[in-house]
Amino acid sequence: MNTTQRPRVIIVGAGFGGLYAAQTLAGTEVDALLIDRQNYHTFTPLLYQVATCALDPSDIAYPIRQIFAKKRNVRVLMGLVDGIDSEARTVSVQLADRRVDEPYDYLIVAAGSVTNYFGNDTVERLSLPLKELDDAIVLRNHILQQFEKAASSTDEAERRALTTLVVVGGGPTGIETAGALHELYNYVLNNDFPELGRAQVILVEAVDRLLLPYPAKLQSSALDQLRSLGVQVYLNIAVDDVGEGYVRLADGQEIATHTLVWAAGTKGAPAAQLLDLPLQRGGRVPVRPTMEVIDRERIYVVGDMAYLEDANGNPYPMLIPVAKQEGKLAARNILRRIDGQAEETFAYHDRGIMATIGRSRAVAWIFNRVPLTGYIAWVAWLFLHLLWLLGFRNRLSVLINWVWNYATYDRSVRLILPASRRSVGSPSPLKAASETAEEPG
Ligand SMILES: Cc1cc2nc3c(=O)[nH]c(=O)nc-3n(C[C@H](O)[C@H](O)[C@H](O)COP(=O)(O)OP(=O)(O)OC[C@H]3O[C@@H](n4cnc5c(N)ncnc54)[C@H](O)[C@@H]3O)c2cc1C
Image (cartoon, rainbow, N blue to C red; front, side, top):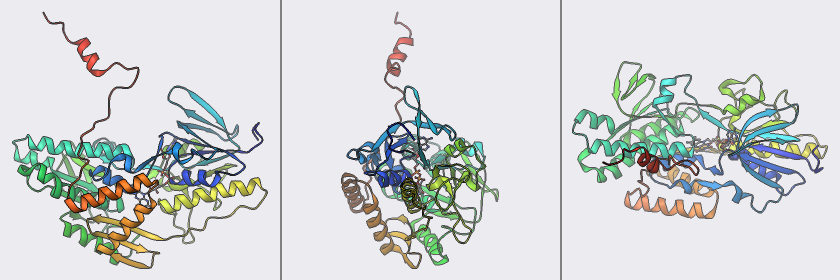
């Protein structure tokens, strides 16, 4: 135990698993330290709306320190965890200006997942992922820039390529992004760029269905709704090759495009490797039903990074409710252990799944029993996502944006804001450029 006598619990990651673990520990007799490489928590289900100019990044992100401002036993630290010593019970954290080693009595790792390119470096280099807030801003900038380039091009084939977009992956992220991009292109940007005509959005999925975990009726409804919107859907065909300006499919068809959104897979975050254990499928860490890591005493892993099988032998999916419930359970089990009680095992309360496809279009499988499609599913999706957002300000802002977007077909966040290349202490790029410029005369 550490010198303060109170057990010290470190939580790595303030996503859904880590946040709910920390909230469970708040106000208890432990000292908790919540570490994240970012200073905000991201509401991932609405990332695609930031990427498609419907919402501002601050609408879906919430400062971590604000969440725990009044929780005296939860400290927040912004830094990248890049080492775990399970013998010495410390984690190494890279802060902005130095490194620190933080001791723990119990550790919860909830570092999430990253985009899986399945080892294809070219896809990784040339495609745009949608996993984090940064990705959404990069994608938004990229799309708007393609339209600006197309508007100044006189080459018809080049214009077509610049306004054609390929999304790979028929899961919820792929279909939501494809639907929203189609609406952005054909209802909003076509007003800004009337000379460009209609743009094309193509969704490519390697298997013969969209939304794999959904019942067949909802899978075909999702397909119909996407097609009725105007998205071209290619099923049962894989991407064979990607290069500058094209995507080639397995049947040899080449699509001229400068925009490839990769939503075809995820794998456990690199932090999984810090535990120095053989990993399970998808780079996930094998855990017991108590969420403690097999062969790593006092270390719990939750959320996307954790590999735990359900009664049918399938791993629990990478979903928010799973991460939340696992995070709470790991924290409760640590408290039970400290109190000398037996730990509980994971029992997933599954309330169903839903995905939106665009304005008035969605599919939902409520409690995995009641299938909903179209407008009702869309309203249910809107209502529940508004409810799940953190913070009143964010809810209000999102609601106002949604009402505005629905009523006007407008997307107010159409700004190209590339990341600044200058930070405090580094010379201003403008100053540097002026210093290297030749003196006149
Ligand atoms: C675009 C998109 C849409 C989605 N939509 C839905 C949806 O509609 N419904 C649903 O149920 N699920 C959805 N998901 C999945 C859902 O986001 C994840 O299942 C969930 O976020 C997993 O929670 P987590 O705590 O494991 O990881 P995350 O929420 O990803 O959090 C991980 C945290 O760890 C931090 N971190 C990572 N590595 C380190 C490190 N080395 N040091 C310090 N900090 C670190 C990250 O900054 C991050 O804050 C979506 C995901 C994406 C990408």
